[in-house]
Length: 266
Image 1 (cartoon, rainbow, N blue to C red):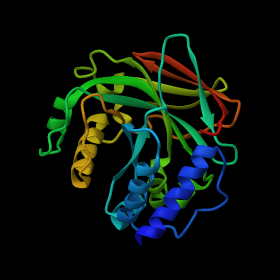
Image 2 (image 1 turned 90 degrees about the vertical axis):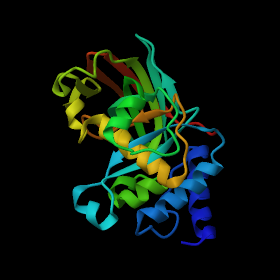
Image 3 (image 1 turned 60 degrees about the vertical axis):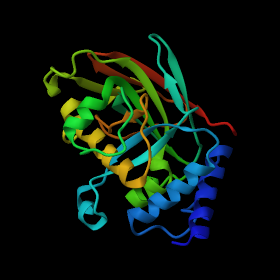
């Protein structure tokens, strides 16, 4: 893909996100490989007006892992799209009418130290860099309603289908707890839509962090202390409409409640 083509696609996505308007179709030729998608993502990241606060990690569907040469994918989470949750609070999540929106209960890692420029990018290194793990919710969102149906190359090209991140309380004792004992339940408008636990993330969230270390090193991206990493959808990807509410309950960790509102231009 030429620089001008990547620039055009990135500009269309960024403009739609900032205007809070949907896109009827993919704004260009759909990439056929992830390297092209990350080129578009890099351009879009440079166009966004606020700095990167963290990264989201998602899974590539099993049938596409060999063709695309990847098991996981990543996208940036920007300052201004991160909310710190306080007990009893209901957080308003802006979504784009006619676009895509979903809530995902996630374990959110906060790095306790800078990622060294070189390293093994393995689970041992990842575990050593984790400062804390928090209850959290990822707002998956895009101006393009069909983003997930069109597949991982499209997802990656539009910020990994991320529109925000809610960071809740830190989980104590996760290092020694049985993974299945750290549970998550997601409800939308009071109805249970998914359940899971720490082990629902393949290799647990620690392996997801190891992936991001390798991914960012290969792309020359720094991960400073304090970087937030949302490690994958624990209970599933749950579509949510304008005006709906969702409560994600972590045990231990407590509940986080959000509701959707219409995105405003910015």
